[in-house]
Each structure stands twice: as C-alpha cells, then as structure tokens.
Amino acid sequence: MIQVPWWHGSRGLETPTPRFAESWARRQLKPIMVLQLPTAPAVSSDTPLPWLTDTQLPAASCVPEETVGAYPLLRRYGVTAPHQQKIPREYFKMAGPERDEKIWALKRQMGKDLVVLGHHYQRDEVIQFADFRGDSFKLSQQAAGRADAEYILFCGVHFMAESADILSQPHQKVILPNLEAGCSMADMAKDADVRAAWDTLEKLGVTNVVPITYMNSAAALKAFCGEHGGIVCTSSNAGRVFDWAFERGEKLFFFPDEHLGRNTGFKKGIPQEKMVVWDPFLPLGGNTAEALQSATLILWKGYCSVHARFSVDQITKARIDYPDVNVIVHPECRLEVVQAADDDGSTEYIIDKVTAAPAGTTWAIGTEINLVNRLNEELPDKHIFCLDPVICPCSTMYRVHPAYILWTLEHLAAGNVVNQITVDETTAQNALVALDRMLSVP
Ligand code: SF4
View (cartoon, rainbow, N blue to C red):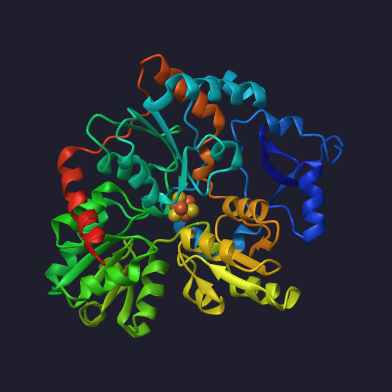
C-alpha cells in the first residue's frame, strides 16, 4: 500500500502542487486527506497522479473515519455513498484552462441574465466564478436582490437552492449544477419522520411545543414549522430565535442538527437533563414518555459530517503547538468542542472575526477546509490553520465541480433549462411563513 496526499486542484483530484507542498511543510500541516492505494508506479511530488486526474471523483475516505463515533448514524441514513449526476465524460476530460475559459465566455455572453452564487465551502475552482460569496441564507437574500437575473446558478447544496427558489421572484429559475449535491445533515431529518415524531409527542400529551428548523433543512421542514407556529434559524441567530420561541411555548423541538440545538440550549441555561435526543430509528425517539414530558428541548439526532469531526484533542494539540493560538469553531461542533474553544460562531462570524484580528495572531479554525484555506490565502499577515489537519472537505458541496458548471451553462445559454430546483407553491408559502418569522426576530 502507498499513502497519497490529496488535494483538489483545477484538474480535480491531484497530488499537491509544489507551492502547496512547500506551504504545508512551512506550516507543519498535513494534507487534508490521505488516500490508501495499492502499490503503484512511483510519482514525483509535482506530477499529478494520472489515475486521479480523470475525475468522476472516486470515492475517497478520510483518515481516520473510524474514530468518529457518529459515522454509523450517517450510514443508517444511507447518505455516505458518493453519487455524481451523469453528464458526458468529455466535460471531465477537458483541460482545466480550456474548461474555465468556456465558463467565463458563457458568463460574459449571458450577462445580467445570470447570477452565480458560491457558498464559502466551495473549492477555489468553483468560487472563482461566483458573483457573490456567502453562507446559505446570505446567498438566498442576494438571489432575491438580483431580480434582473433570470437564472440563479447556486453553487451550494440542495436545501440552499430550495431556499433561493422560495425567496426569489417567480420568473427566476434556480439551478443546482449537480443534482446529487445534497447535505448529509439535511437528509437526516425526513419530513415524514419529523411529522411522525410530532404526532407521537402530541399523543403523549407533550404540547405547547414550538418547532424550530435550522436553515440547513429541506423546504418541507421549513413548511412544517410555518404550519405549526414554528420558525427557521441560522447559526447566527439561533439564540435570538430560541428567545422568540420561548415567548410562545414551553418546549422546543429542534431539527435537524443536534449540536447546534444543544450548544444554543446550553448558552440559554437549559440544564443538560432537560435536553433529550430524538432518534427517529427508535420507539419514542429512544426516550421514555416521562423524559419527553419533562424535557425543555427535544433535539433531533442529526449532525454535520464535517463539523462533527472536530475534537477536544485537536484543540489541546493546537494549544500545545501554539500557546498563543485563538481557537474558533462553528456551533455545529459538539458541545465539548465548543466549550473547549475560545469562541464559536457562524461561518460569516468566523470570517469577520479572523479578518479583523491583529496581524501576527494565530488562529486554529474548526470549520470546513475550503473556507479555512481561503482565509489563509487571503490573510497572509495571520497564521491560520484548520483544527483538524486531515479533515475532509464537505463531500456533498464537493459534488459541484466546474465540469457541471460548464455543462449547465451550455444548456442554459442554448435555452434549455436543466437542473432547476423548484419548491411547490403550498410548501413555499408555508416555508416563507417560518422564514418571515425569523426575519422579524430582532
Ligand atoms: S458542511 Fe455540513 S451542514 Fe454544510 S452542506 Fe456540508 S454536510 Fe451539510
């Protein structure tokens, strides 16, 4: 077996370029992923591996996946298998510069008819085409503000495109470059399962409950909240949304991210014993009726496959390696990780905080690797690194490859709308109710 350090470059999966290799060595970083491959012909460090450059993106497993206890749950939902929407292979065989030039040409040709949105977690090869960068909610708002654009190409994942469709104008069409770009966390809370849990709670007499769904959820769950006096939250406003909800009910039912819910509940002073977890695969969600009746916060058993990987051990190591380090993590991390960090906040919060920090400061960041690497590139006056040196990129975000962007734009420019994401009118109206409630929260 050989170990192959992994990077994603303009041609897809590549060995590190000399520049990155030098940068890693200087900062004592490890590659973000190491593939274990059978013994293969020797390669030099600056030669892309031939069997990895023709990308239908082979399955790559992070090291050490086994150490992440939450992974069996991900497998139970059947959301780990890497899928790619089938498009002609010539799009993947095209040289990066040729492909990129075609995309730029199509962008120029379509002009104001097209707006490209890029989530912060997208790779540089994708983000270069974005007219706007942001987190999921900010991008949806930007989509709504560009009413002159007929096409909104959303380089993100499925639930984000749904939100953009809900918030955009009726004449606008939201396009997801690869239909397989979902979100493993959003997929952990199915509409039918959440409704069944709600019915069970009602039958047990667990009433006066306000449902809250995280932005990272299907439109159907936002609609469920709209129908049942509930609300949507983001990682920026979860605390204020909890306050809103407690003015209207005694208990909260939070989905799909157990960790954001617990972290927010902890900050609101809810005792641990008043927070229970609802596992949709178990009777009564794995609880007793009494536990559900006395709970203040019912947390859906779901998590982000990226943020659940961060650990207290990584923080301890960062503090040993860099005694002056500032540790900042996303609130989708586990409670003990957030407690061990110096600060936590949404993606936008992390960006603002690190950007505004004094030159010469050191930052260990617990969030998606593409964002951390971009901050490192754009803020050379600071020492910035990812808390987990072998962390995966978000594998579902990663399904948006420039080849899909080109394929999509060629169809759109020819008047053939592909990969449009639409939310039916009833669902959209109910979801909008929950989103509007969130926007009304001061
Ligand atoms: S980073 Fe986590 S929450 Fe965001 S899209 Fe990926 S899996 Fe979903």
